[in-house]
Image (cartoon, rainbow, N blue to C red; front, side, top):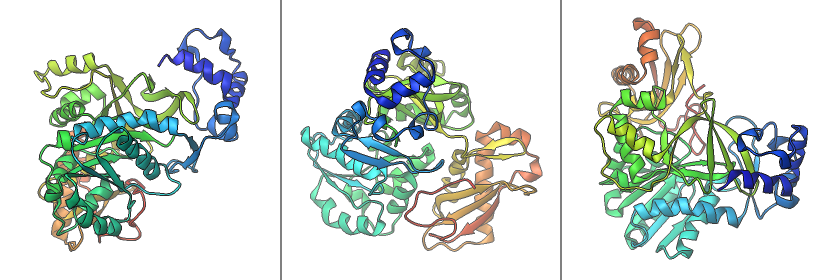
Length: 446
């Protein structure tokens, strides 16, 4: 992609963008450097114009999706088959790593179905793979656990492997169901929507019978605004696993005490920029977006720069991967708790819940809070199905999370008084309707 050329095409063909540039006092014919193009956001651009005006030639495309509304009111996004064809390559890269170009594969879409962006878009992209010759068949029970467990025993034995696609906490909940012969299904998993730890990957891979997480798991970096922007590769996973074991190296590279999602992307399809520690992207979608500030915290690393950095630690990845750049994504800062001036991130807590001493007793879902006057960060944790909460288990959970916080978060270790560091843990039953209602996207911070 040559972003300045896309900028000029959008300025000529998208009514809302032409109006936006006029408001900003920008003559598109006079722009020579892409860095001189003003930033667009959901508030200063998308929400200020009718849907049709945001589309090429003022014509709405063939499908509308709705954002999750996790940071405010829902937004509407136009999709087209042309968008899906471009983004389908991200799915193709993942499925090739799974060996799905040669093996009869059942793709089970476990994302929410309906107006929300994830499920129907995933179905369309996976069906594209079949059109390209992948021996892939898709079934879409959505985020209905009962339906997933009803169709799998019938369909899975008829295929060489099964790919589950869904949000990380939901897939873990499905995989944790007792009595399902996951190993016999030759499972692979594709996630999106949340950052997870390498401890989570290892735990879920073990429970699902996945022998090699590098070629059996993958995360997608996707947004309602523009579909899938990047994807994990075996190379990026191997690098992330190394950095997870070296918090010092990870903090130096990413500038934070938490491990971001690390994916590779195609700069010819999505053009990324860094802006004050956050990400901008440019892409030709159903609603074309130019220098769009999505507000995800993260940054960019070239392929050569990444391998050069790792070589300083004597690490040379054994996995061969595409020579494409990396983007790392933390997510948005509103999902954080401040305690004694230390930022406590859900990613830090997750690692503590996935340790061997407690992982079998909890689902991994939790709610984090730090009300004024608290004697420790307040941590409400969902128990695994059939597990009874006890004071002794609560103490073990607190100790495990504290150990993870002290190892991963230097701010927490130095800012929080020692007698206030141990989390105050409350254990709630599986599916607790107040804190962990089933079937909805979970919020980790209140």
